[in-house]
Image: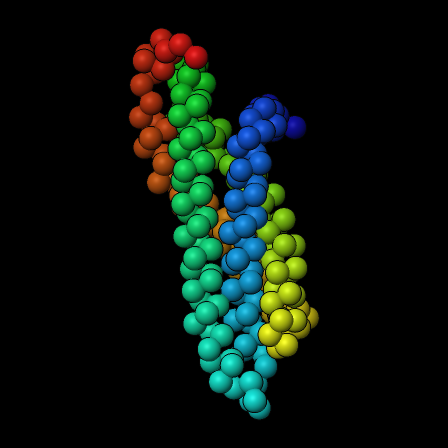
Length: 187
């Protein structure tokens, strides 16, 4: 592995609290997003009969669940990344002093978050399958096999996309760290 990936993996496992909080939070968001997309997918597959009114009521519910999941993802990633930046100001300032360019500093932080987010999204898809299976059994409506492939892809892709957008929002905060003050500060 190149050094940048070794350092990212080292930091991920060095800050175990951030790893756990990020993976659990992203997994929770992905679980909800998958449940929302799964319900939407199933409501589109099952046609007519006594399920017609039930299908129509599932669509807005699934959209609300998905929107809530994406907002949860943004809120959690924003706060966790903000906390991570606050705890690592000295490290980030050191990178700037060593001559890392702005893009390199941002990718240093974002690579770690992306790796943790991907792990959380994979766990979230699995948990989403379990949740959706339970919901479908409770509702006595459809089956997990009725879920379209796009529900898996969309829930994963949107969570990762929203994670990236949230990180981009925090770019000015990372790049605005005062090198002199951060390096003078006591740990």
